[in-house]
Amino acid sequence: MTEASLTETAAVGRRFDRAPRKAAPIVPPQDVAGSALILVIAIMTFLSCLTFGAVTLVRDTAATWQTQLAREATIQVMPDDGLDMEAALRAAQQIAASHAGVRAAGVVDRGATERLLEPWLGEGFEIENLPVPRLVIVTIDPSSPPDFTAMRAELAEQVPRATLDDHRTWVDRLVAMARTTVTIGVAILILMLTATVLAIVFATRGAMAGNGHIIEVLHFVGAEARFIAGQFRRHFLWTGMKGAAAGGIAATIVFIGFSWWSSLNMATPQADQATALFGNFAIGTAGYAGVAMVVLLVGALTAATSHLTVVSYLSDIDARQHEV
Image (cartoon, rainbow, N blue to C red):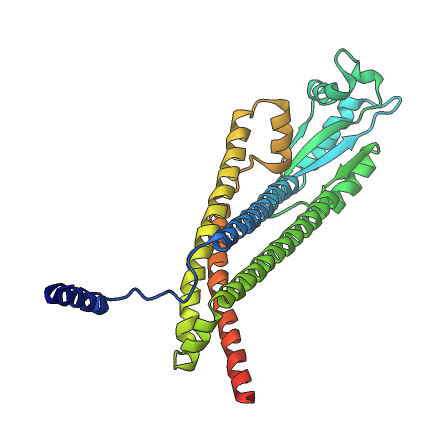
């Protein structure tokens, strides 16, 4: 080899030596394990958002039922031999309307009563031949309800076959059911978030195990625990936000799909029954805001959990070093 060739080769070697080298990341780049963690976080966030939305739906529907029941009371007049049903209904209506706190009192006519019984008895029956009670619907003022005790006493005196139902029993049962459902939903949500935290802990420890020797060397030569933990925190924050966003978007699509299906089938009997029980499957602005909060919470938990795990790991290294 000539002297000129040797000189050119040495110059090229010096240029390569002076070229900046790309620093290897402390946290391993995305691999199969990282993709699996994103999928786990997405699934847990999806289930958490569904749980939150279901709890919101039950709470709102129960509040609607409670409001509707609190605005009405019912007077039932049982048929009896020799009883003038129409006169008894008018008397019960007048008694209810005379009490303060009653906005209106209306008799459910014979045609409306027959329509209520048609799903069970069919068409063409004679309601006069059946021991079916007739109803008086009393609309009350929720802010200033009437004295139901006095109303019952007056009805018992003037219309012995009449009974007053202020729906208090149903309201109490409804409130208890709603509170139980909300409590169960919150417990399930906490369990899902706990499972997500544990998955992040295992993933963080796995990432540290893959680059444990690099982390220990950096720590021993003076790298602060805050710096190393920050690297992991940023990495897992990005990972958690990607998984949480995917889960939140999927849950939002599910809620929008249910609401759209409910609006399309509004006129069918099945949709009427479902709407009566669960509303129109719309969780509202508060529900979607809650879904966004769950997504942000999962991302924050991911970052905080990885940070604490790394700090604990480095503290264990310092403790072992001091023992030696």
